[in-house]
Image 1 (tube, rainbow, N blue to C red):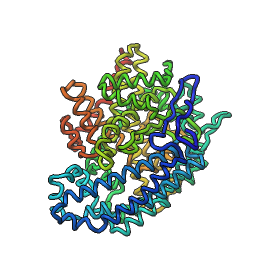
Image 2: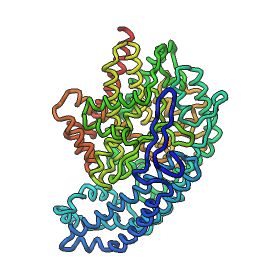
Image 3: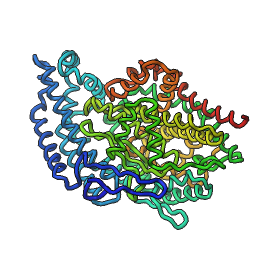
Image 4: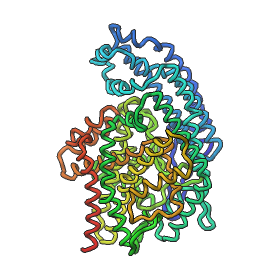
Length: 609
């Protein structure tokens, strides 16, 4: 992506992968100096102020009036339009920044936009607070019929936040201080990670290529990559420890003022999921460690003719099995074919991401690591960021992020207030897309060693999604609880990390010196505390969903699309009911975990076949 404009850029070429697409952000704005961007900023400021002048202090009286439903609907519609406008501005600024977090112009552009939008949106804070102060009976009467009924799910949703809301001035203070508070520390983390260089032999690289080397065929390469990550992270641990401590304390202050009891309760509320449901998931996964991760890594060590594996071998490709490199066109065709086998509509939506350049695929210096699908706003369309390097896992990542993209396209019809999906269900389409792609590849793989490698790769992905993410959640809980008693040293953070990793990975994985630093690069701990259990939630949910699909139940595709189209307009219990699934039942999680175990049993069977 160019620095001064988001107009079409030349495709980055690789001799092995073919032409990798770079996203075209012109569907949002034409560039950093776009007149439309400047005009929208000015419009956002004026319309936020005008909205406050028109509606502040009047909602309670309106709710008691004869045309309450009609007038409140007018206010909510105007508020939703403003959310779309503000979201468009910040989506563009955020995507520009993700494309090159180390470029000063991109960083300033993002920082300035964030500061202005935070200031402008201060004028909107009153709206949810006043809506939640309307008498229950009056609000129920207003939404019973007429135009306001459309937003009934959103109004009921925000009502759940009422016990944790503060008075207007305090909410304004929290909002305005976010720019110099948690948002600033998030940015420091991003820019620090992007600027780090990891030395392997005589090469200095950014984080993403070195992480990729941890999946190299050569153990020597994997070992060197691990040592390089550990060495650079160790040099910067003081910074990462400071960021982690500050954000944990920042969250504790906010939770205390908002009267949240448990360290993760604010996340559960945001996810619209009950604490008991998450606790049942965590308990089920932790109880399954011995029969999942411990069992699998013991089997993998056997394939390497060893009793144990070093931590840098955890994601190693199987020995004596050539690892296929997928060109970009191979990856595209693989995923679209798998999606098309499930639903032509699903494939058609995914195809637009390729045809219309909604994907940014190459690895570039300064680019945000990892992968994501950004929904932007309903009036636009999502964008996908990858760091594509042609490995089988990169194909699965493409399938995963396109699942998010399809979900976001379908949910957009709910509008800016109800399109966003709680994190617990936000991973549904992505993990389902991965499963479709895996099953499609497996169906056409007949050679035993290649089949074993494919199943092993899927098991490892599922372990990383379920076991590893619950271990991450456990790490976060221990850190945030311990932080309440005082600041944690870098060594204490490393010690907590090693404890939870040892428990989850089991005795077949030896955590060698250096691994204790690996907590420091995980962005979810910084950007979205306790987000990580959503991955395990989504994987177990999708395994259960896929079990229903595998039984070829009539109408499954239609019910699945209805679930995605609902966005955030329905609770998880409503969305799962048509499939006969109930996340409050502890046995539900064991259904999903059982599918992982089935694949491990199949791998074990290949040893004697």
